[in-house]
Length: 306
Ligand SMILES: [Fe+2]
Image (cartoon, rainbow, N blue to C red; front, side, top):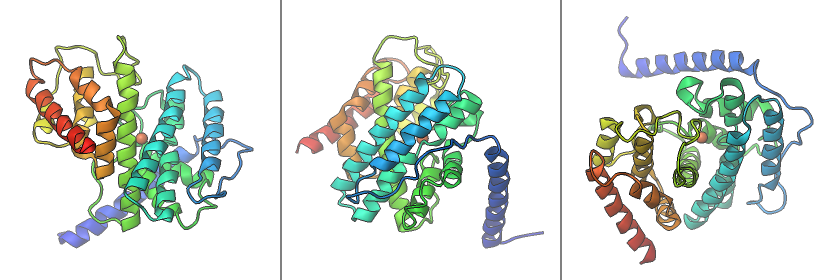
């Protein structure tokens, strides 16, 4: 049977919804439902999300206590969430978002990585390829655990932002609020991942396999695709990483993946991206890409000071 473009789009959408519902029900049976957690909601000022942060901390502790193995990667994730929340707050303020939109951004920051705890407990990895998309799983968890039931006006935009925060590219058509919240969280997330990776990779190895996604710290290994993405001024893909140096370069390519001007200012101000890129070997396969990124950074730093 031949279908036109619109029918094909509708058909693949229906197939995807079916796959998603099958996946959700299969996975849901394996997920923890910690008892006794409070139901977080608005409190005081519209930008106060402390009740949600408190909920996340209790949830993280509950999953951690059910998890075998080293709890340190989970604690790094909770610190990461707080970093993303701070960045989202800064972006929303500098971009002068309407307060309800800013609140949605903060909630999406709190919950964007809620699936990381279960991902680590169930699969012992943060690699989506070896488990499942933690954005998709996060959207399932947000619904299943009812954390947005007291935020009905914002629940849809927040849940969609959680789902899409780690997608390689966003769908072309998205409601304006979903797009703004998702882009804010994606930018805030990238900025804080740079902080985490800078802290980890600025010290001598060996590096945590969980943090470097099990990529080897071997200077002879590099990916042409990651270098090419940089030279073409676009964000590289995790799927192409061959080594820790590729990871450094991939993080540098996020200069091209940030949506908001406020995010690029934060990137220049925070200094993590510069340290990661400077740590790449100045000669050899990364030379041209490294030089290009350092020029981009110098230009962003000058704009931030100007
Ligand atoms: Fe994430």
